[in-house]
Length: 442
Image (cartoon, rainbow, N blue to C red; front, side, top):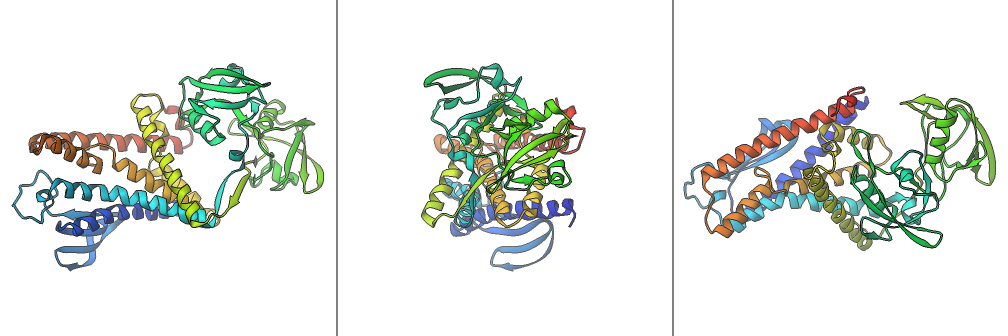
């Protein structure tokens, strides 16, 4: 199946399922509280088929992108008839529960999917279990300019004591162009430094220029038809040296190749109990000299249900707080809007996950999207569920409803904002996806 078609099918299924779960949350709580639900639709647009049960028309519609629930009297601009089954005639706490049910379903689904994955295949980078020792500092990078050295052990970053590499990577990524306080242990002494990661890549995330000292620089990926594969290197080989120089991190080899350019290099590896040497000639791709290897050793295990649940809750809480921090930093203009992924990039990620072996990559991506959808809908933006909750909170404090005229103006402004936001996200997606267009980003 062509990659484009795989991506299209994957994103339609994943996003459609997420929206459907979201709307089912609203539907279930509304029915439970006695709100009349007029339509529960799988898909949007023209009604194709369905049936009516009670007051609700259960239908399948033409556009297979999620679904929607239409409750009687849910539009605050509509006139109230006094019918107790209408949404706006229910007490505020009922409306609050209906509004929060959709995002809650998405968050619960994210937790559930991670539990399922962790019980079958919990995989994470091996370096996360290693001490935060810097294995290599790339020349000319912020880390080099700030005076960091190979062998430094990071003992503090942005107020976090004794972080692991995951925490270091996150703080680095969220601090492009922003001072970042880092403490390192060097020769038994604590040295405090400030580094300003530079904006890097199409997403403009922070890049410091250091690399972790890896447990082993083992080949975990071989790109097809690249020099490494052609020379006889294999996945699982441990790279010991390039032209006789030890390689503490893959970044060290990348820097060596930028010096040697297309000159053949001698690569010494350990394969099982044997030492082997291969001659490889790098090629120029994307303005860099490469041989076509990747090194990201991982650890794989399975967790019992209690441990899987605890870890899932912990990871989803951590991710939720990161989403909120990302929004805050974007509002403060401390991080680029380019870091947001839109439907095109999500489609690419979904297609890649669907093409990988097994179901866990796609389940992990689905969990992440579900969490993002749940948290995003809780933001206090009118039209979104969080906006409904915000108005309910304000009205509860005022002990009366906000006037329809004010609500109408606010909803109109919010609609324009969301349309412009969607256009910007899709535009950025196109620029980051179509070759050659990324240079046009401001």
